[in-house]
Amino acid sequence: MKTRQAVVGIVWLGFAALIVWVFLHDGRDAFTLPFDSLTNTAGTIDLIIELTLVSLWMYFDARKRGTSAIPFIVIAVVFGSLGPLAYLFLRFRDTGAEPIV
Image 1 (cartoon, rainbow, N blue to C red):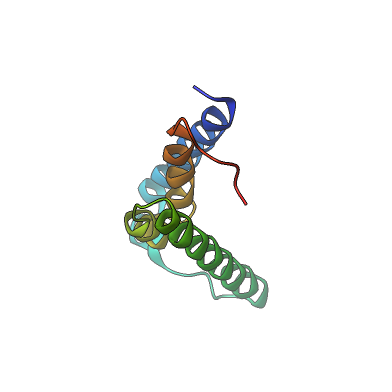
Image 2: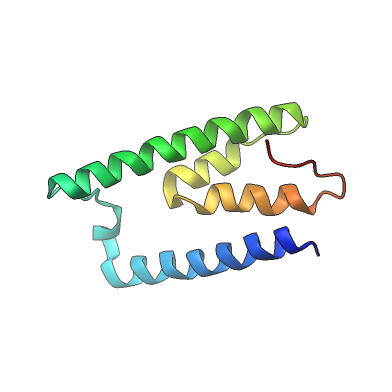
């Protein structure tokens, strides 16, 4: 296993564990967006912008590679960074994976 893939896998597992913990701890409240203060609103909007940009990159990268990123984008919408991390993990699994540009 390549070092990059191992790092992405470790980050994915850690973040997945955090997401499970949040859902178990907060239940339905985990699905609400934190717009209770201006700081939380700015942070939430920033994360939405970032996930949108990463999703666009995944879409065009997968299209260039002859595959689909739609499942990973759906995962990103529901679980945030788990979608892009899973995409990177599987992308690095390819033996001929080119550098990310």
